[in-house]
Image (cartoon, rainbow, N blue to C red):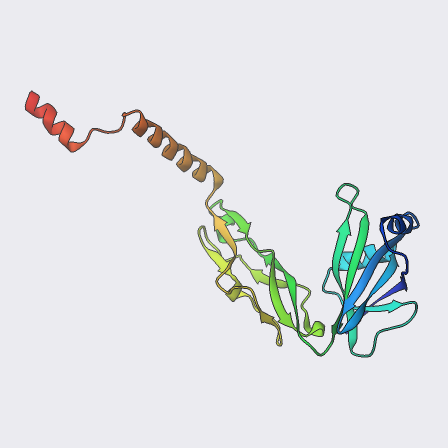
Length: 223
C-alpha cells in the first residue's frame, strides 16, 4: 500500500500570537499524537495540508518531523482540521499515529449508485440518510468508500447498513438496521395529502364535518 509523504517541522512556540505568525508565513500549527508516543507540536505548509485534506481523513501518511520518520509499522492519519468559519483557511491540524498491526475505527463514505425505479418510473425522490458508516479494520484495509446499488428501489423502499458489501477484514460498527437511503413519494403527492389533512382538521374544528349517524336519525324523527 502506498503512503502519502508529508514533511513537517517541530514547533517550540505556542499560543495565539505564535500561531498567527505561523499562518501569516503560510504555515499551519498542529500536533501529532497516538500509538503510545508523546504528543508533538509541529507545523506544516498550508499547501501540503490542503493537498492531504483533499484526499480525505483515511489516507495513511508517511509523516516526518524535522526529517525523522516514526518507527517501522507506524503511520499517521489526518484526525482533525480546524478552518476559519468565513475564509475556510486552515487554522490548526491534528495528526494521529496509528499502528499498522492494530485495528482502528474510522468513518467511511457511502456512495449510492444507479437511479431507483421509484425515481425513474414513479417520480419519487431519493433521500440518503447516512452518508458514512463506522468500520473497524487494520489501517491498511480501510476502504476509500463503500458503494451500494439503489436502482431496484421503488417508492417507500429502503436500503440498510446490513445491505452493504464490505471487503474481507472490514467490520461495520454502525447499527445494521439503520437506513442508508429510501425513495420518498413524489413531493406533489405529499403536499396534496398534507393540504387535504390540514383542510379536514380545520373543517372539524369549525364543526363543518359530515353529520354523525345519530344526528341524521334525529332529523328524520323531527320530520
